Image 1 (cartoon, rainbow, N blue to C red):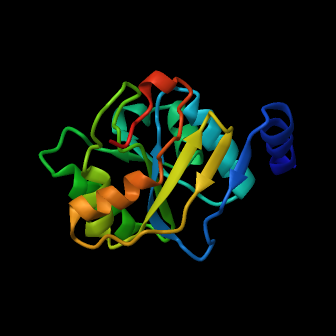
Image 2: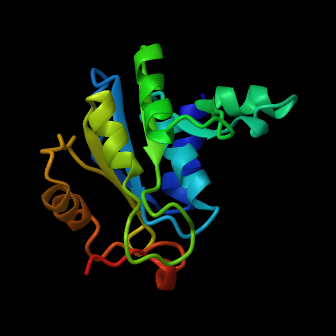
Length: 184
């Protein structure tokens, strides 16, 4: 019932479409979602997740996982991350993949909703350390499309891999186009 409601709102009322999908057999991956220019991206992701009907996850600081919000964040696929520790964040997040049967981590490589010229590298090293593919996901407000691309396995050549991964986002516009990542 929820999927029908999500489809009606997302496709009919909002006019969006989803191009591509994630193979349900792929239980672990890092999904990079670009561009990230608005808090509304969260809702685009929630609708996409509800329509695709696959578990998708995120990490957030453990301080957010307190009563009563902890139930909601965990229900939405959240995993708390202790950011106070001296532990390397890449190692901490990569270790979550070992602990879970299904973990499809959604992350914004821009690291913020502001305009950036370069991506942060954490997602790349998390994927390598966890030995999982990266799935490029574009939230294109210009075309009202969520594009889910095929999994990409890193090659250990970060410059090459970033060039390939960034190419998936040529011409993609965020909710606030002036803040959109531009592949230069």
